[in-house]
Length: 232
Image (cartoon, rainbow, N blue to C red; front, side, top):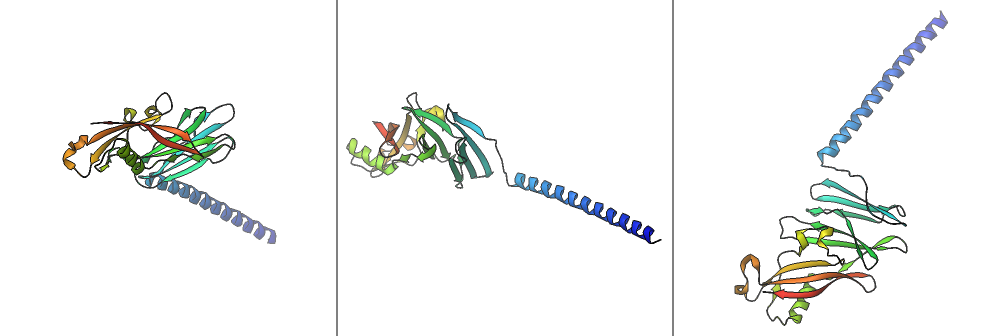
C-alpha cells in the first residue's frame, strides 16, 4: 500500500513539472513575438553587412540601420578590426550609404548627412583609410565662412556675400557619381548679396560659385576647395 502511494505521488509530480515546462515555453514564445512587434512598431530596420571595399589585404563592411525616422546608425568594420567607425545620426534627415573613392593611391570612405527639402543642405563625412594600422582618420573640412572670405578677397568683392542653400554636386547626387574621374568633388553654390539685396536675382541669387574639392595632405588629410570661379 505504501509503495502504491509513492507511485501516485511520483506521477502527480511529473505531471505538474510537464505543465510548468509548457507554461515556460508559451511565455518565451510570447516574449519573442512581443519583441518582434516592438521593433516593427518603432521602425527598426536591420540590414546585413555589405562589402564596400576589398583588396588583397583587407575587406571593409558597412551596416546601415534606421532606428526610427530621423535617427540612423552606421557601423563600418573590417576583417582586420571589429569596428572602424560607429556613427550615430539623430538630427532628422538621413545618412547616405558609404562609398569609396580612390585618390592618388589613397582610399577614402565617404558618406553624407542629407536634409531633404532644405535647399540641398548636407554635411560631408569623409574618412581616410590608414593602411598602417587599418584605421579610419577623419578628413578635415574647411569652413564655409572661410571659403566665402577667401572668395571675397580673390575677386575683390566689397559687398557682403552669403549663401542660404547647400552645395550642388554633379548629377545633384550624394554618392560616388558626384565625384569626377580624378577623385575630385566638383561643387556649385548660389551666393547672395547682403548689403545690396537689389543685386540678387530671386532664386538665382547674386552670383554662382563653382569649384573643386581636393583631398590634400598636411598633417592629416583636408578637403580643400580649389579652382574657384564666379559667374553672374
